[in-house]
Image 1 (tube, rainbow, N blue to C red):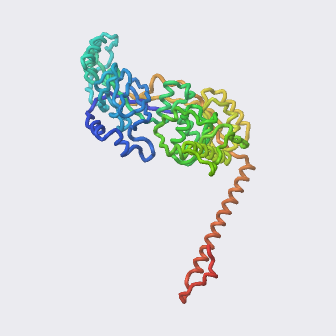
Image 2 (cartoon, one colour):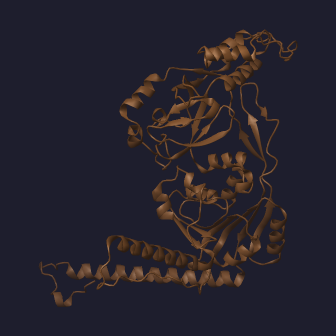
Image 3 (tube, helix red, strand yellow):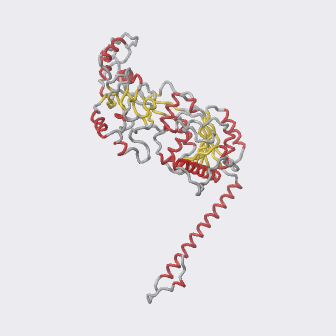
Length: 493
């Protein structure tokens, strides 16, 4: 069972952050990014410009935005703010939009919000037993609140006025008061929290918005796939991604720029990985050094490209544009051929697939390229296709620990004295098949013999080289009379 902790949801108290925002604005939008844009692990530490990020709104929903310097970012009824005020600030902080006019798309100012604890609320002997939420306890009506907003009252002041006009507030327990305040803050305060645009955050965003787009792959199910696949830096993995590049991006993040990720595409063109392109937490060097993409036709050993770019004729003069175009075609062709060579060399550490493909046919196509103890992970929103693969693999030699699981997660509210599971949770995140590839005894023995002979040959070559170098040093050393051997008698290496 996976356990997730929900956002604390404690009451918030705005603190003065004008100095922080002022220093950021005076230094320029990109000054913070230039000084420390990423951590030692390559992840973003400050909010970047011109890259997608994700904002968590008071409704707990997520909204992707791109912060363009000089532009205004609108959050609908939650207000608008200037992108320059947020660029260069740290992730994870909660901000309040103060002022502005959402109807006219007029930007307000940003102010940091710090969480306050239950200790700031006064202890009471209330038990909530005489509270009846029938709507009569709140003296302020909707019309009154709208008039207060029109008069310029907003944010914290409006919440305080709402609390004062509620006749049952003092009769509530401390925990009930805190919950009531949090509910009013989410309704009347224009709050948002910028989050890292990493695979986990984007997976949660798409799962709550359009789960069918990512085949009902919940964030905990994605974590299961990475764990079952034993994804680690330096490994070699084959991925079939039918969820917009979400799986490929998660594997790349785990590799950390070391190893190889070979993505097989179903079209003779670069895949349209719309989700992958929004994962701003991946450094470009990780993608360029680690990721290779080929299409299904190129996985056939006898496949030949139709339009091979010709080598440049030295007697022919090309304009700069045509010369660059030809160079790009040659580079793409050479990269594809190198990726095919890596695939046919085999010995990949794992194979992961999330997509609308027949799982058994894909596995039979690629199983020959897997190394011993390689992990196979297949995800599907339906149980039956994976059960068929499980039944077939259990009949064959060469597969261990073949199982199908249904990941399940329960979110917990973690608050002082109020830790409990949430009442509503996600029903399903699909099903996952995992297995381990092993060789039959004959193949394993032949591979062991080949590896042993290779090691012995390497050791013999290393020993011979060391011996020759030792003899050469001794021959060149001077004798007791201070004379060395002539060059004709020396062994040269």
